[in-house]
Length: 316
Picture (cartoon, rainbow, N blue to C red):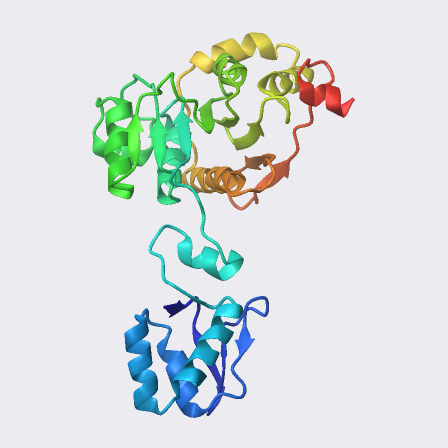
């Protein structure tokens, strides 16, 4: 057993568990021996060890049970878990995240695709797949380049993922199992054909792309629920009537290399969006990340009135 946070002393024999008022509890009414025992629970201990400490300190068994029950009811005493994000989740939600069973497909292992994949592995996503047959080039993610220019992107990504999470499942997309989410990334735009194919297979798609100055991450397009890939295409066409023609060229253009801190921010926001959605949060909107010192701007992509998706019908 172990406390989910630290013990803080407010006076010689007065203390509290935690600082944030949403989770903190006062230890008023406990003797100095009992306070010392609670303080020792910041280190993981087995029940026999705690009972021995209590006996040495002169704390009766029934009093020990009362103190431990009080801490458990308050949600600050748990059996320690070593999984990713388990300790903060215990503090915040009194439960554990369920991410090991999640499967994310990375359509392109470009700068953003690789960065998002690595971030998701750090967050505990259990399966990552890709069908990218390209090779690592000078405009790819720095970690990919460090593995070796000219290596296949899939092998380089596999090497990096295994460093981050040795037990992660990695491979090509199995037609027999649909991923929980796909990431479609690119330069200037995300490939609308790839987005459309995945949405047509009922796979939610998180889009991300690098422009000449800004980076965009999101939206998350969920079939028949949120604005789809065609909505994004139509909105961009409203801003630039030549966009449909330009988009075909943009998707085949040489990849752009983003400003480093902007890319780090965009990748972090994307990973946070995806993991939060897996953890039960609403579908995220999208972010525009400009170069420092500008702050990320949250944008809302509304269903386009000219699109035939269910989302646009529901919004009409």
